[in-house]
Amino acid sequence: MKIQNVFKNNEAWVKEKLSIDPHYFENLSKGQSPEFLYIGCSDSRVTAEDIMGVQPGEVFVHRNIANLVNNVDLNVMSVLNYAVRHLKVQHVVVCGHYYCGGVKAAMQSADLGILNPWLRNIRDVYRLHAAELNAIADEDARYNRLIELNVQEQCVNLIKTAAVQQAHKERGLLVHGWVFDVKTGKLIDLKIDFPKIMASIMEIYRIV
Image (cartoon, rainbow, N blue to C red):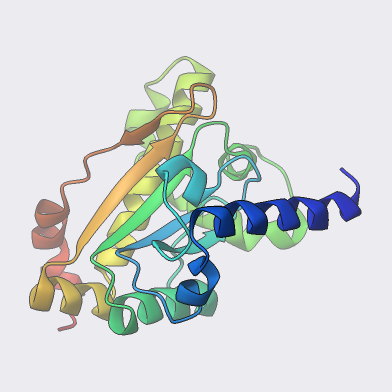
């Protein structure tokens, strides 16, 4: 795509929005009150608004390689705190996707330079679930299961934070784990048992 086409596409998009609602952008500029914080992968095939069928202003989005919730990553922690404590989102979603290059890279025994410390978080997920994963003979099935388990562990990382614990206590905020199947276009709810996970880790991770 030529870069000039991006601006032509933008003009067409603006025209379409205004044809439906002449005050669309005027209203959009007044602020945001999304119900969802979506933490997803940076993969160009997985765009939050498209797969969720939502409009601008309805979901607050953070994306990084392999949708990690790393407690020492100031970027994701800043997004989380702003969305939960200031925007008052009611749902926090971690959304992974099948055919994730970050997870695939973490399964390889290779030095990937600057990516090593980031991908180590996914290798840690493998270590935690090694018995289950090593019992899966088919490599693709093991790969897909690691993608699901990675989402699950990132949900656990969310539950460890003060922002999520406080918001759940005060207004019932919920954490969800999803996977997007690139091959079918379907969004899959992993049905993360948020109350059960919270109860199981609070002895160690309770902050508020």
